[in-house]
Length: 180
Picture 1: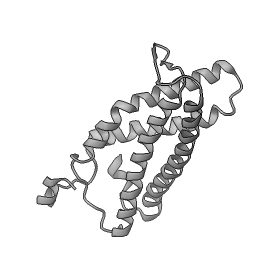
Picture 2 (picture 1 turned 60 degrees about the vertical axis):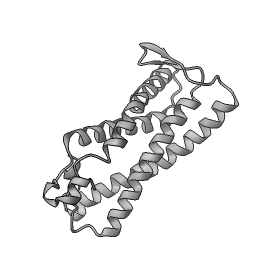
Picture 3 (picture 1 turned 90 degrees about the vertical axis):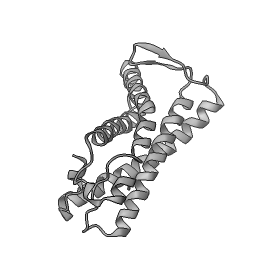
Picture 4 (picture 1 turned 120 degrees about the vertical axis):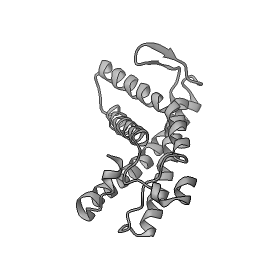
C-alpha cells in the first residue's frame, strides 16, 4: 500500500489507474504470445515461418526489457485499489506471493532469453541486436534454464488467470474489473 493510501483510506480506488492497467495488458499479451510462440517453435517445420515466429518472439519480448523496471518501480508508487472484503486475507497473501513470483520469473525469463540467444537477432527485421554469446555451452546451458523458467512462468500465469476467472465467474466479487 502506498504511503498516501495508508494515511487516507478515502483515496483508495475501485480499479487500477490507466498506466497500471496498460502495462499489465501489454505484458499479458506479449507473455501469452511468447508462450504460444515458444512452444510452437518446437513443432514448426517450415524454416521461413520458424524464423519469422522466432524473430517476432525475440523482438516482442525485448520490448518488455525496458518496460520491466518501469512496471516494477511503478508497482511501489501506483495508487492503491481498495481490497475486496469478501476475499480472505490469506488469499490476498497468496495472490501477492504469486504476483511477486510472476515478476521474478518474468525477469529471469527475459534475461535468460537474451543470454541463451546465440549471435544476436534482427529486431523486428529492422536492425541487428547483438547478444552476449555465440552458440556453445553457455547458450545451451541458458536455453535449459530459460525453458525451465518458461514452464514455471506458464504455471503461475495459468494460476493467475484461473484465479481471476474464478473471482469473476464464480465469486462474482468484481476483482477482474479492477484491471479492466
